[in-house]
Length: 139
Image (cartoon, rainbow, N blue to C red; front, top):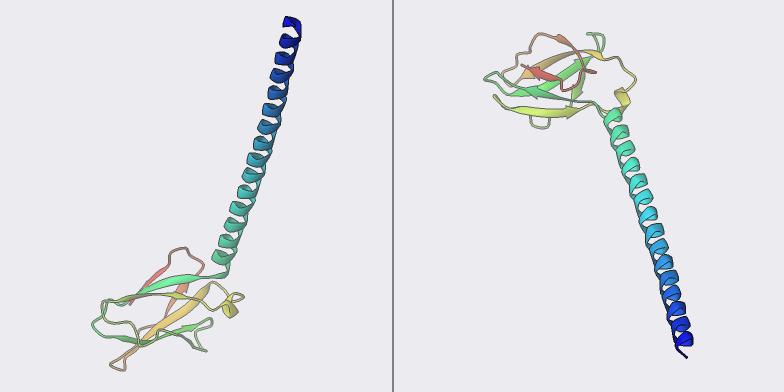
C-alpha cells in the first residue's frame, strides 16, 4: 500500500512537471511572437518615417526686416519665378517653416529666392542649396 501511494505521488509530480513545461512553452511562444510582432511594427514605423522625411523638403524663413514679407519667390534658373504659399505673409521679426511641394522633387537643390515686401520693394535674389539639412533663410 505504501508503495502504491508513493507511485501515485510520483505520477502526480510527473504530471505537474509536464503541465508546467507545457505552460512554460506556451508562455515562451507567446512572448516570442510578441517580440517578433513588436520588432516588425517598429521597423515599419521607421521605414514610414524615413520615406516621409525623404519626400518632404522643408526650410525656415526668418524676416529680420521691419516690413512684412508678402511674397516669397523661387526660381531654378533665376528667370522664371514661382511663389511659395505664405498665407497672409511673414510679419517683421517673424518666421515660418515652409515645405516644398512634391512636384518639385525632380528639380535641382540650388534655387534662387527673393522676397517681396508690403512696401512694394523686393530683396536681392540669392542662391541657396535646399538639400542642406536645417536650412534657414534670413531676409
